Length: 158
Ligand SMILES: Nc1nc2c(ncn2[C@@H]2O[C@H](COP(=O)(O)OP(=O)(O)O)[C@@H](O)[C@H]2O)c(=O)[nH]1
Ligand SMILES: [Mg+2]
Image 1 (cartoon, rainbow, N blue to C red):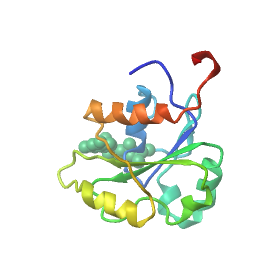
Image 2: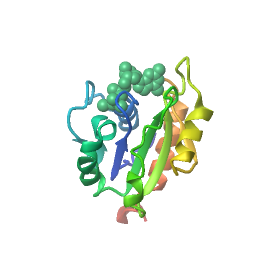
Image 3: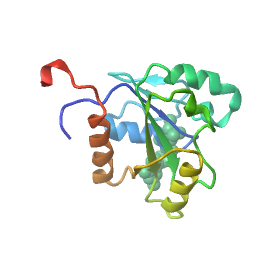
Image 4: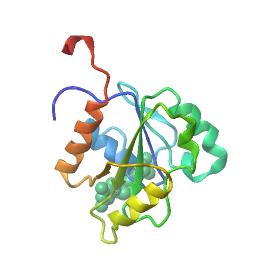
Protein backbone atom coordinates (compact mmCIF):
# COMPACT_ATOMS: atom_id res chain seq x y z
CA UNK A 1 0.00 0.00 0.00
CA UNK A 2 1.22 3.50 -0.56
CA UNK A 3 1.79 6.16 2.06
CA UNK A 4 -1.25 8.28 1.40
CA UNK A 5 -3.65 7.94 4.29
CA UNK A 6 -7.33 7.37 4.25
CA UNK A 7 -9.23 9.78 6.45
CA UNK A 8 -12.56 11.37 7.11
CA UNK A 9 -14.33 8.00 7.17
CA UNK A 10 -16.71 6.30 9.57
CA UNK A 11 -17.25 2.52 9.63
CA UNK A 12 -20.64 1.23 10.69
CA UNK A 13 -22.22 -2.19 10.93
CA UNK A 14 -23.62 -4.63 13.45
CA UNK A 15 -21.63 -6.16 16.30
CA UNK A 16 -19.03 -8.59 14.91
CA UNK A 17 -19.45 -7.29 11.36
CA UNK A 18 -15.66 -6.97 11.27
CA UNK A 19 -15.30 -3.19 11.53
CA UNK A 20 -12.32 -3.09 13.88
CA UNK A 21 -10.50 -5.90 12.06
CA UNK A 22 -11.03 -4.21 8.70
CA UNK A 23 -9.83 -0.84 9.99
CA UNK A 24 -6.78 -2.59 11.42
CA UNK A 25 -5.96 -3.94 8.00
CA UNK A 26 -6.71 -0.70 6.21
CA UNK A 27 -4.59 1.37 8.55
CA UNK A 28 -2.00 -1.34 8.93
CA UNK A 29 -2.14 -0.96 12.65
CA UNK A 30 -2.88 -3.27 15.53
CA UNK A 31 -3.95 -0.79 18.14
CA UNK A 32 -7.68 -1.42 18.04
CA UNK A 33 -8.19 -5.01 19.12
CA UNK A 34 -10.95 -5.91 21.52
CA UNK A 35 -14.55 -4.88 21.64
CA UNK A 36 -15.31 -1.37 20.52
CA UNK A 37 -16.84 0.34 23.53
CA UNK A 38 -17.02 3.86 22.17
CA UNK A 39 -16.53 5.57 18.88
CA UNK A 40 -12.79 5.41 18.29
CA UNK A 41 -10.99 8.07 16.33
CA UNK A 42 -7.81 7.30 14.44
CA UNK A 43 -5.39 9.63 12.76
CA UNK A 44 -7.08 11.61 10.02
CA UNK A 45 -10.48 10.93 11.55
CA UNK A 46 -11.13 7.33 10.66
CA UNK A 47 -13.96 6.45 13.03
CA UNK A 48 -14.82 2.98 14.33
CA UNK A 49 -18.30 2.84 15.80
CA UNK A 50 -19.64 0.34 18.33
CA UNK A 51 -22.07 -2.10 16.77
CA UNK A 52 -24.63 -1.12 19.38
CA UNK A 53 -25.06 2.11 17.45
CA UNK A 54 -26.69 0.06 14.73
CA UNK A 55 -28.26 -2.73 16.75
CA UNK A 56 -30.17 -0.54 19.14
CA UNK A 57 -32.53 2.10 17.80
CA UNK A 58 -32.11 4.30 20.82
CA UNK A 59 -28.46 4.75 19.85
CA UNK A 60 -29.27 6.10 16.42
CA UNK A 61 -28.95 9.70 17.56
CA UNK A 62 -25.44 8.91 18.80
CA UNK A 63 -24.64 7.33 15.44
CA UNK A 64 -25.89 10.35 13.55
CA UNK A 65 -23.81 12.79 15.55
CA UNK A 66 -20.74 10.59 15.27
CA UNK A 67 -20.93 10.33 11.50
CA UNK A 68 -22.11 13.86 10.87
CA UNK A 69 -18.56 15.18 10.53
CA UNK A 70 -17.19 12.67 8.04
CA UNK A 71 -17.38 12.71 4.25
CA UNK A 72 -17.44 8.95 3.71
CA UNK A 73 -19.41 6.22 5.45
CA UNK A 74 -18.38 2.60 5.01
CA UNK A 75 -21.24 0.19 5.70
CA UNK A 76 -20.26 -3.37 6.56
CA UNK A 77 -22.69 -6.14 5.70
CA UNK A 78 -21.26 -9.46 6.92
CA UNK A 79 -21.44 -12.11 4.20
CA UNK A 80 -23.07 -14.56 6.60
CA UNK A 81 -25.75 -12.19 7.97
CA UNK A 82 -29.37 -12.94 7.17
CA UNK A 83 -30.66 -9.47 7.81
CA UNK A 84 -29.39 -6.07 6.89
CA UNK A 85 -26.71 -4.57 9.08
CA UNK A 86 -27.20 -0.92 8.19
CA UNK A 87 -29.60 1.26 10.14
CA UNK A 88 -32.81 1.38 8.18
CA UNK A 89 -33.33 4.70 6.46
CA UNK A 90 -30.84 6.41 8.67
CA UNK A 91 -28.35 7.13 5.92
CA UNK A 92 -30.82 9.12 3.88
CA UNK A 93 -30.38 11.84 6.46
CA UNK A 94 -27.02 12.63 4.90
CA UNK A 95 -27.49 12.61 1.13
CA UNK A 96 -24.16 14.32 0.44
CA UNK A 97 -21.91 11.70 1.91
CA UNK A 98 -20.06 8.99 0.02
CA UNK A 99 -21.58 5.65 0.97
CA UNK A 100 -19.27 2.68 0.43
CA UNK A 101 -20.82 -0.77 0.71
CA UNK A 102 -18.62 -3.58 1.97
CA UNK A 103 -19.55 -7.26 2.15
CA UNK A 104 -17.27 -8.27 5.02
CA UNK A 105 -16.07 -11.72 6.08
CA UNK A 106 -16.48 -13.04 2.53
CA UNK A 107 -14.30 -16.03 3.44
CA UNK A 108 -16.51 -17.51 6.17
CA UNK A 109 -17.97 -20.94 5.61
CA UNK A 110 -21.62 -19.90 5.27
CA UNK A 111 -20.86 -16.72 3.32
CA UNK A 112 -23.49 -15.74 0.76
CA UNK A 113 -22.27 -12.56 -0.93
CA UNK A 114 -25.20 -12.42 -3.36
CA UNK A 115 -27.65 -12.45 -0.47
CA UNK A 116 -25.65 -9.70 1.25
CA UNK A 117 -25.83 -7.56 -1.90
CA UNK A 118 -29.57 -8.16 -2.19
CA UNK A 119 -30.09 -7.09 1.42
CA UNK A 120 -28.12 -3.89 0.84
CA UNK A 121 -29.89 -3.12 -2.42
CA UNK A 122 -33.31 -3.49 -0.79
CA UNK A 123 -32.12 -1.02 1.81
CA UNK A 124 -31.30 1.45 -0.95
CA UNK A 125 -27.54 1.04 -0.66
CA UNK A 126 -26.19 0.81 -4.18
CA UNK A 127 -22.99 -0.75 -5.50
CA UNK A 128 -20.22 -1.19 -6.20
CA UNK A 129 -20.08 -3.77 -3.42
CA UNK A 130 -16.60 -4.48 -2.11
CA UNK A 131 -16.23 -8.05 -0.92
CA UNK A 132 -13.54 -8.20 1.72
CA UNK A 133 -11.81 -10.71 3.92
CA UNK A 134 -9.14 -9.76 6.38
CA UNK A 135 -7.32 -12.88 5.18
CA UNK A 136 -7.28 -11.73 1.57
CA UNK A 137 -4.91 -8.81 1.17
CA UNK A 138 -5.91 -7.97 -2.43
CA UNK A 139 -9.52 -7.47 -1.28
CA UNK A 140 -8.30 -5.02 1.36
CA UNK A 141 -6.09 -3.21 -1.10
CA UNK A 142 -8.93 -2.85 -3.56
CA UNK A 143 -11.11 -1.22 -0.90
CA UNK A 144 -8.17 0.89 0.26
CA UNK A 145 -7.65 2.14 -3.28
CA UNK A 146 -11.30 3.08 -3.60
CA UNK A 147 -11.27 4.94 -0.28
CA UNK A 148 -8.14 6.81 -1.36
CA UNK A 149 -9.86 7.82 -4.57
CA UNK A 150 -12.58 9.47 -2.47
CA UNK A 151 -10.08 11.55 -0.49
CA UNK A 152 -9.93 15.23 -1.24
CA UNK A 153 -6.80 16.09 -3.20
CA UNK A 154 -4.32 17.65 -0.81
CA UNK A 155 -2.31 20.70 -1.80
CA UNK A 156 1.09 18.97 -1.65
CA UNK A 157 0.09 16.21 -4.06
CA UNK A 158 -0.80 18.62 -6.87
N1 LIG B 1 -13.15 -15.21 8.81
C1 LIG B 1 -13.13 -13.88 9.02
N2 LIG B 1 -13.28 -13.40 10.27
C2 LIG B 1 -13.29 -12.06 10.44
C3 LIG B 1 -13.15 -11.15 9.35
N3 LIG B 1 -13.20 -9.88 9.84
C4 LIG B 1 -13.37 -10.00 11.16
N4 LIG B 1 -13.43 -11.30 11.55
C5 LIG B 1 -13.59 -11.83 12.91
O1 LIG B 1 -14.89 -11.49 13.38
C6 LIG B 1 -14.86 -11.13 14.76
C7 LIG B 1 -15.42 -9.73 14.95
O2 LIG B 1 -14.56 -8.80 14.32
P1 LIG B 1 -14.48 -7.28 14.82
O3 LIG B 1 -13.58 -6.57 13.89
O4 LIG B 1 -14.17 -7.22 16.27
O5 LIG B 1 -16.01 -6.81 14.60
P2 LIG B 1 -16.69 -5.43 15.03
O6 LIG B 1 -17.55 -5.75 16.20
O7 LIG B 1 -17.54 -5.04 13.84
O8 LIG B 1 -15.62 -4.43 15.30
C8 LIG B 1 -13.40 -11.26 15.18
O9 LIG B 1 -13.23 -12.53 15.79
C9 LIG B 1 -12.63 -11.17 13.88
O10 LIG B 1 -11.41 -11.87 13.94
C10 LIG B 1 -12.97 -11.71 8.03
O11 LIG B 1 -12.82 -11.01 7.00
N5 LIG B 1 -12.99 -13.07 7.93
MG1 LIG C 1 -15.21 -3.27 16.94
